[in-house]
Image (tube, helix red, strand yellow):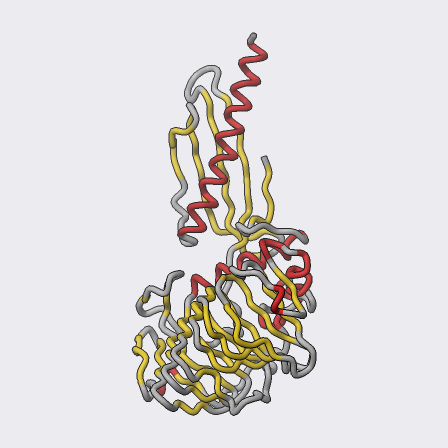
Length: 339
């Protein structure tokens, strides 16, 4: 009977430890900044201890979860089992210079709102931690009733027309040359994103990712990496962008169009060659790759909003980082898990 009892205690402790990892993953999905852990938390007729720390895994930023389940705590029959998981820690790509970053002259029209002040996952305003509203290698024309806001040196500037000059960066020079591909936007091979990585992730369907040459075949809500590859001059237009993650619209000529973003809210990072007419909401950031936009440089002419969000971008890159670590990933961004 003693062997049976020991087996039961070990199995129960292991179940507690694994449940602790799942509990931590849920907590981190709600609050990516949480590092508090748990001490002697009652669970399943046992005790749970969890530590959560920032570290590295395979040379990538990661969050380490150590979950220890204990049965018969502080008794002679005490049994401990530990589960360890590494969760991809999202990062802010250096290429994200503003709420909207472009390699071309741009024009804002209509009631478009571009706000580089920081926002939470649901678009709630977070003070004194944002970035520029617009960053471009060329010029900006702010027309219509469009408004631009942002943060400079810790000072927030609400969207206005004209936008405060300090949060509108024009005629900028990108160190080493402006990135020309989605993978280079995320740091390229040195950061685990060699050319073709994002495309392969989308093809593999990791974390709900989708790859399409015919965007009409995409299903919403978008998740993971959504990669739309179009022929030269091809345009995906009048779409619903509801979802989250990384949204890529690209081809080797850098002239794939994302036009008339008419409905839905996208939370994360949008990387597209040519962006025309934002009419919906993007919470996160947008980067345009082409130096030669197709339609008068007009990035928005309706009532859309681009709200910069550190949280939305880092969640998106965190999920992508988990998939590059070992060739597989999960919706929760888990890089590895040991029981």
